[in-house]
Amino acid sequence: MYAELSVEGTATSIEGPLLFMRHNVNVGLNEGADVIGRDGRRRLGRITLLDEEHMVVEVLESTEGLSPSTTRVRLHGEPLRFGVGPELLGRIFDGVGRVIDGGPPAPSVQRLSIDGFAINPSHRAKPTDFIETGISTIDVLNSLVRGQKLPIFSGGGLPHDRIAIQIARDARLRGKGAESFAIVFVGIGVPHDTAESFRHAMETSGALEHTVMFLNLASDSSVQRLLTPRFALTAAEYLAFHEGKHVLVVMTDMTNYSESLREVSASHAEVPGRKGYPGYMYSDLATLYERAGTVIGVSGSLTQLPILTMPSDDITHPIPDLTGYITEGQIVLDRELDRQGIYPPVKVLPSLSRLMKDGTGKGFSHEDHPALAQQLYAAYAHAVQMRVLASIVGTEGLPKTDQRFLEFGDRFEREIVQQVERRTLEESMNAGWEVLKTLPFSELHRLSDEQIRRYISKTD
Image (tube, rainbow, N blue to C red):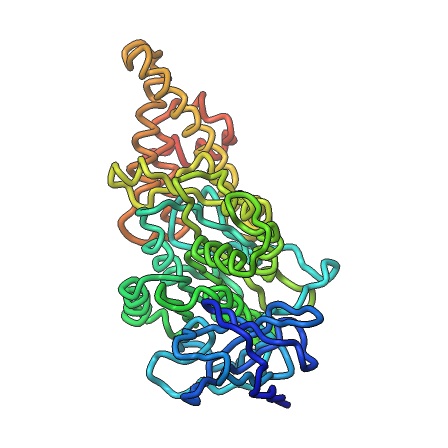
């Protein structure tokens, strides 16, 4: 039931996206509202601040043309909701859930609050099962597990958008449940040409059939940007926990989200924290990331792959720093590898998937997968150390074994990190075994004798 406020004297001022009003009606925090100007056009908004005398409505669209004396506000009587249904797949929405693909409105079977529902920790199931992304450095060394939240830390100018599309297009669930795999792709504050490239890539590849896209443009309201991941995650929760699908949510770029959070916080005159970001940014990001997971007794799951650009490539910046606390690892992109023309430029050593052990090995990916990953990581770490030493004493000053490690490091980056096309897990593992043949058997400490005999010492 909507309740319309009195026209005369209710709104007091408009500052940017904020409409300041007198608190003269019973209303709740985060309640949805329609802001109606003299032209009769409805602009979506929500109540974001309340005290005894005043309240503030965040207008999610342009406030151009609004005047306090002629503006009306119609309350929804409930928080913002999104109409969801099984026909969400294959559709493209804007940042606040409006269809922008030229088709009719998506039929809905229920309306869910965009703030989601809290999963009781005792009802959470342990994330398991391997999700194949098609990228070797992720699949072999930092595996993504169904129900996990694994961010990608990038930098300005690095090809994270290309990686986002590649994963959204190529990711798949192996074995049981593969037919119920779905993607929710979220572009947050992206330029118009980037949004079009996202749309074109998904449509031409055929991946749009099992994908829901939400595209928030850089020209859209900063307030609207705060709601885009919430609308998208509401769609993902419905598909996962109501339709029983295994949903992978790819969100880019969470830095744009955080910048909007800082902008809106400053407009509310809130006390800033580190680097001007609000002190509650940790809990705000947690309300998004913690919507991932698996639930006991529910067949579906929700996995998140958020992407963020680190300002000045600083991994200690508040955005990646707080994200790292909440999520289960990180995939780090490297500018130096990118300059060398290596794609995808994944920096292996600081990258980590904390739940990899729960979704790989026998019964999940391959029984020899964990041992291969450990050996590749250890050997590459040693190769990086030898590069530092070689820069001091020269390659000729190193023992023959260490020179073999230098050769391994170069081959690892050229044949494992760099890839032109999608690889299956088996193809990635085969490439890993092949590169390990560069090293003496005596240096393969993480492999069993049987694994060395089967994969390294065999003759073709």
